[in-house]
Image 1 (tube, helix red, strand yellow):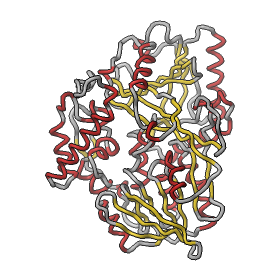
Image 2: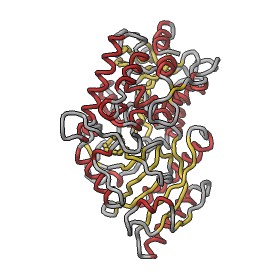
Image 3: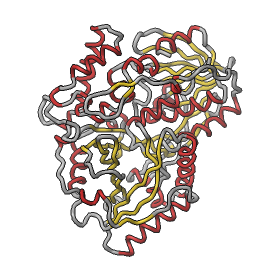
Image 4: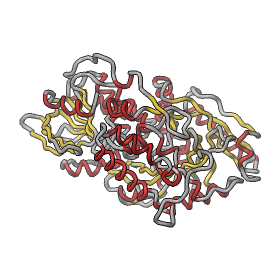
Length: 511
């Protein structure tokens, strides 16, 4: 179903049981959950689906090992249950993966203390994953500097098969019954009518400026890091708020010896830094930096990049320079605190809990916190609140959802895996821009230098052709799509460069 067809359905479908604000992982998973329970649901995303923090994670489905250091046992127990349930129910979306915690401790007691912690972590997961074990020699050791690794402590988590952005979209694409609509690039405003017990929302298509008015019995705020802003816009108060932590990953050339996900201790911060293979690159990071604003949190600085490269140089034999960086992922962790919270501490010391808040006199729910691993649990908590106030009025699903149809695929130079074709993405995945396609519907922008433009714009012609497909053959619109995307890439990747022009920064591995 095309994006235009989704909007046209609003001509007839005006009344909804629930309107969800936010098309990130929490909003998408809740949308799927409510649809399966036969609710009439409208999902509203201000930008593209998964265009916030949900496109910049480490893509691991894990039980929260690091939170043991703060004795946050309840969070670890819940995340471990969520991880194992998701692996069981969504086996085609992810795969169990062994992680290597690299121990540099020469003190046998320190090493065994870490190993004991992994066994405790395994027991908290009720032994559902592979048992921890020690390997003194492993293929990636040849990449490391002498003395960095005494041994590796291995344990099992899971890693997404495609990407976090496609993980989000799969929840949305699974539902296409009457009364179930998901809209990207949609602005909304509205108010609550107490007498009618309905929210009246005005929707504006950000691309065409067309407007529609709808009614909803309940609104759920799943806006992620924008949750507090959305609440303020609609006059909603809450006992919680978010504090923000920026996380930056670098996409680096992947060595042929690199097969396992490596975790290294950051001793000065009691944290870890990871090196995770992903297609033709490997993700190195993340940083953990408190930020005061959303805008600051989505902006990569030269300091972020220098810190990660310095940490890499401490551990690996082969030097990596700033010119070797293939891509950058920058996202924000929304951390839940009480509204009166004023302390200043390292973000990892804050609980990764999730909170569902129902407004005291309006049918409005706010979702705070959240991780890829916990999205199903968050959706179920919201569902229980919704059931108390709103009964489903939708129909059973009919037809074949877009997510279950045969996907037309194509190839992009220097990428071994096939990717979804631009035409299919426009027709079935509401792809509207080059960034939608290159960054979120595919991994091209993450696996190829300069956001897919390549060395000296070597792939510019291919991107122009893709833009023409997205624009439906309209040459002027295609030219705007390409120019807008290229300008955005130059601005967003500017911390990598010391000169105004794009240098030769494609990785040696991908060339």
